[in-house]
Image (spheres, helix red, strand yellow):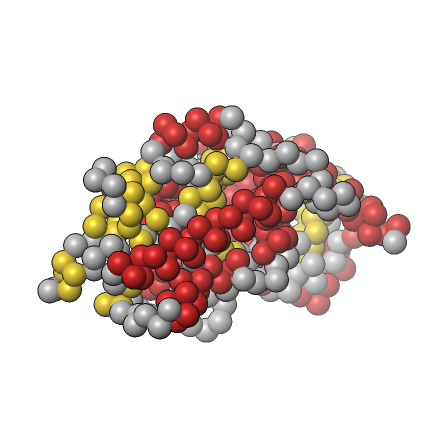
Length: 436
């Protein structure tokens, strides 16, 4: 019990940088009607309330497809679809209104709940909704009239921002209204995507029945750039549902910096994704102007040019071209306009379940922009995939930077035996370790 208590304190402290980073930011959260019917949904509501309490500007977009299907079946109405899109006639529209209104009331009630001894106690959260989405008819396509099925025409930015500025959570349903007084059935993916784009949201967070984006071999893609994801989708190498993928790629391509995909089935997935280093789902971002990738033999010259000034000043141990060519597979680099501006090497010691981070360098003109942090994040990811438990580093000058990244001072005795034998006592490097 004492261990759990200390673990909780450590977790809370480690989340502080993320709390500060997310405060005042706008997040659009999207989930379908399937999530609402899942037993974990009340926990998701509690976590959304926590985001609001921490100063995050939250827009929630819900779906209602299974609820609509239930009502259509009860009224013995024939469901009609064309290319996966529901054709909404007048009878079906009544089912849509009924289902969307019921789901909205359920979400509002859960966000209002404040029972003692519950996570919502004393929260005093305001939820605002209304005619914030202007819609237009989908019209007739390939000879098929979609009737009251529509698309988002406009998002009421001013109205939503007014509510967000007041500290309220904005709740958007999969319905829109026209200037002629008509009601349209919308896809919640369209509403969420357009809301995120129009509001210039900092994040779109999509709840799915998947933990994230998986490739065809069953691997969870923790971080992926949009062009690469679209290429994999085109080749059929992604198994996550198409509607989720479309929301992720469309929002990022239109300027939303980050789009996340997490599971609505896992308790705490939202908090883990936002407030821990490793997260729990998948993060999609636009192609970096600066590309982070594994080094190849063609990069040897660029790496030598980058590290030479640091070698000459004694910050780094000298490496010959021959040694660098032999070890090039251990290097990770950041390339900007064809020039290598940062690098690092990861040497594995699998028998000791540890690895060495070495030759960390950033070009003087490009320091202070989190490039070192990007490389370290990639190093940790690779070490984790290789079954490594900890990373160690030897440094003489940049100890403060490694401490800022979470490394802890260690003794020479913490090094693998092979590394101990090669330790240069004259250089007297300090040892730091980091848990993966």
